[in-house]
Length: 330
Ligand code: NAD
Ligand code: TDX
Image 1 (cartoon, rainbow, N blue to C red):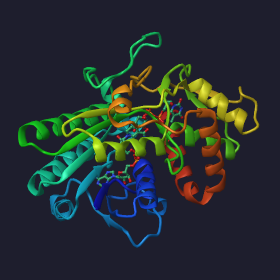
Image 2: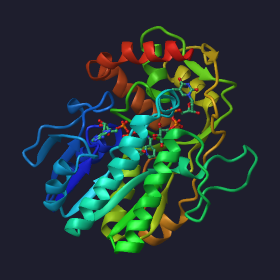
Image 3: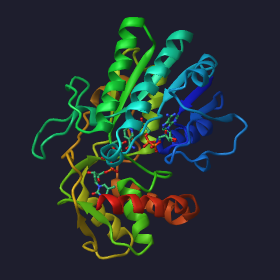
């Protein structure tokens, strides 16, 4: 099986490639990745079944032949960081909207199966005391340039499936954590700050809730959808991992042997979504997928150990990332 993975040098994509090569002997993987600041060839393993192509998903000349040679396209490539989208939205429109359009047109041209990776952020946010969780029927209500461009990409996929009969599925997953995540993101930023003797930085009061899932659980669900998902369907992926940001920081500090209160509050993110929560029951019931990491604290412990053991991987990005945050006052 020839698998084309867009964005395969990013956090979730690289974990997907590693897991695919380790668990599926029949798979040959081609990664198409622009190697932006978020992409890192060092996240990928050495493997004769893996080819890395550096290129832009919005460039049809690059995309078309690769899609034509693939049995399935797993589309992870995106600009993925909310804070960056508030500072400069254009790359988000380019990659998330025009890039996805280009992938769709290439899949249509060649009749290639597509799985589109999306996020729970397309549904907007929930109040802290709302008993509801997101389901595949929740109306779209995105807040940021990031989530609105991801919502746009989902709508394009739905339209191509319905109007052109494209063989596509979509998954909307909650916040991922695990190895190879860029140090701009919440959990790796705090772990690497602590390693550097810098206090963690909590936006606002830190009451915002995210629904954490280990990246391997996300990627196993993606394979379950590719293997057995209904064409045209949307699947939600989550692991019942709702935790507020303050608790996450306190847990990281405690796990790293420091006082749980040794963090600072910084300026809040404009338009900051309050809470995300996934109801993944359709994905469980239809596909039999279940998360393996059910204890967030132990998953976090393993992630802390990974960042301690892999400083050479993250160190080159750390200073530049913190300079960007300094300019944003966060
Ligand atoms: P990431 O930022 O770590 O990786 C994105 C990858 O895409 C990078 O390797 C980058 O070089 C590549 N890329 C960016 N623009 C490109 C372009 N124009 N052409 C080719 N490659 C390009 O992101 P991530 O956290 O791994 O997220 C991957 C996908 O999963 C995204 O679609 C994101 O919306 C979605 N998602 C992420 C999370 C999360 O918690 N991180 C949760 C749910 C869904
Ligand atoms: O230093 C920080 N302090 C802080 O309190 C950072 C970087 C973040 N935060 C807060 C903001 C969020 O409430 O932590 C929470 C998580 O922040 P991010 O890691 O930036 O993730 P989020 O904005 O929730 O989006 C993530 O999950 C959904 C991914 O970046 C998206 O790609 C995915 O779609």
